[in-house]
Image 1 (spheres, one colour):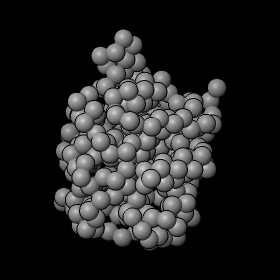
Image 2: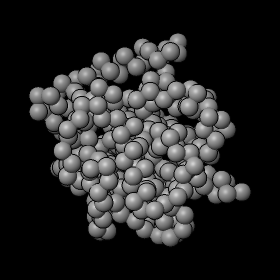
Image 3: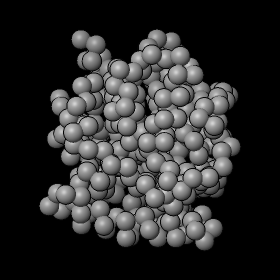
Image 4: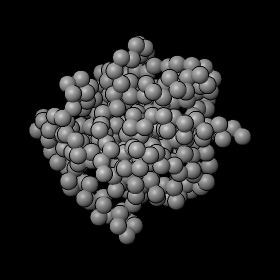
Length: 297
C-alpha cells in the first residue's frame, strides 16, 4: 500500500517547504558556494537534506529543534540557491562530506549533531567515518549505501533491478536534456507518482534542484563504497531511521547498516515511506529528540 504522496527514491524529491521567511547566508568553501539558515541556540545540530531538496526541506525540524539547539540547515553543492557549475563526472557523497567538513570549519564548530536524510544521510555517514571526533550523534534516514547489500543473497538482484529500471533511464533522460522526464522516471520508480502529477509550485521547486540529480545519475561514483570495517569502527551514538512503507532497496540497506554499526538504534517511522521528515514529521521529530536526550544520559 502506498502512503507516499511526495517522495523520490532515495532523495526527498517533494519535501520542499514553501513560505520559509529566513534569508539564507552564503559561504564559500572548497571552491563552491553553500547557503544556509540557522535558528536557536545551544549545541550545533546540522540538518542535511536529500537529493532534490535544499535548506527549505527541513522547516518542520528547524522549528522543532530550535528551542534546544543551534539548528543549521544548509543546501548541498548542487542545490538551490547555490550557483555552482557541474564540472566533474565523479560526484559523490565523499565530495559532499568534504564540503561539510569545510563548511563546519568555516563556522568554527568543533563537535556537532548530524541529522541526514537520504543522500544527506550518506554524506553524514562518510563525514562521521572520516571525522568521528567532530560528531556528537548521528541520525541516518535511509542513506543509499547500496553497495553494502550486493554480496548478500538477494542484494545483487535488488540493486540491479533498481539500476536497470530507475537509475539508468533517469541518467539517459538527463543526457538528452529532458530534466522533467528524468525526474518523472525517478519519482515513478519509487513513489508511483510522477512529476507531472505534482502541483506547479512543487514542480518548479524540483526543477530548481534538478542539477543535483543530474550530477549523481551521470556520475561514475554515485554510490561510494562504505566498508563493513568502517561501519563496525563507528563509536558515536547512531540512530537509523526507516519508513514503514519504504522501497525494498532502502529497507535492505537499512537492515545491513543496523547489523554492522555497533549499538546502533533502529526505528521505523510509521505512515511514512522514504521522505520521513515530511511524511510524518511529528513522529520523526519525537524519535530524533528522544535519541538526542538519551545520548546525554
